[in-house]
Length: 401
Image 1 (cartoon, rainbow, N blue to C red):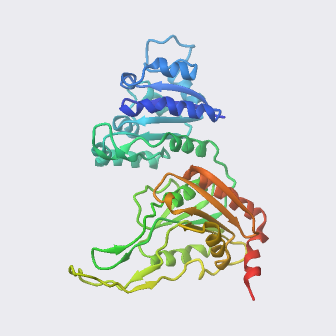
Image 2: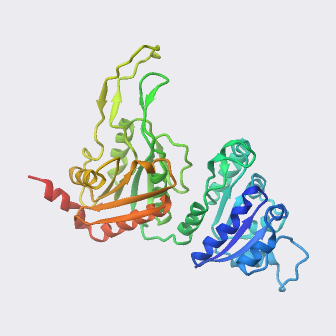
Image 3: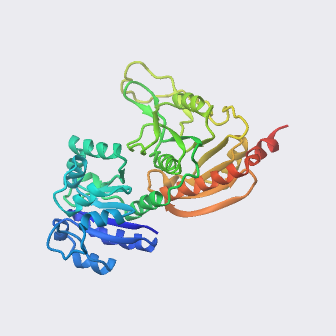
């Protein structure tokens, strides 16, 4: 499908690079590997040469040439440039335009999309310089596949572990396959949890990570849509090209949805909006033997949402039992065009399986897949609804009277 240059840099996570290469090949891509000298201390060039069937580039000099400047030739042929893993050192070089080896020279020469998947120690990851460098790259349009939190090679626990192979490959797939099928469309996507304060330091919330909503917003933007992402508190970076509106409470999310939905073509409510709020105490509640909280129901955003003809609304249903039955009730009561039903076990995970229920009564069961891939499948369904605009009013007609 695409000519991809895979850059490999020097850290322990380099052992995953051959797996990334293999998975990309399974997708039909041609892979050319460029390594740093430090990367060769972890995985030998002969491994990548055997897997890719191509010469491995590492040095600026010492190779027989084909009559051209090799790093320029490679950059011109590349349709995507992926660096996985990307060390803090290489990220810093990219951000500051340094080109002191073959890999950085290629990066400075490419005009194709660039993807970096950082991997490093947690303190290196959290260092302000690293974060500033990544922000600078993002401003230039570089796509970042953020590392996972977990047990690191150095023995520390925290952020910095290279993202899963599947997540990196799917990020590449999204960029390679991006289209303009949603150009001119206005999307509103909600994500994450909401929080309801009990007192100045305590609050009620849920376990939503926001990953599903962020993935949908990212993919909609890559398909050309104008996207507003309304997000409760998360630890996620906003996707490139997406307008982020941060909220905290269910009431704030409701206000923002109402404000932006007026001009929207599509609303996708992936957020886990809290069902209850609390009259917050102005002072910290002192420790007591028991405490009773008066929980009050929050307003249902979807049920109260005014809609104009042609607008498409997609909801989510996270259930612990009777998944299809409860999701179908929600589909009908809230007059949705599509509902994505999934099990509570998916909260916080990078993977999910889902049951798609449509307003016409049909359904599709999707097996476990990366959330970024599921986001694409959901958008495929939205595009089908756009081609049959009368579809979304079937539920409303069926439930009135």
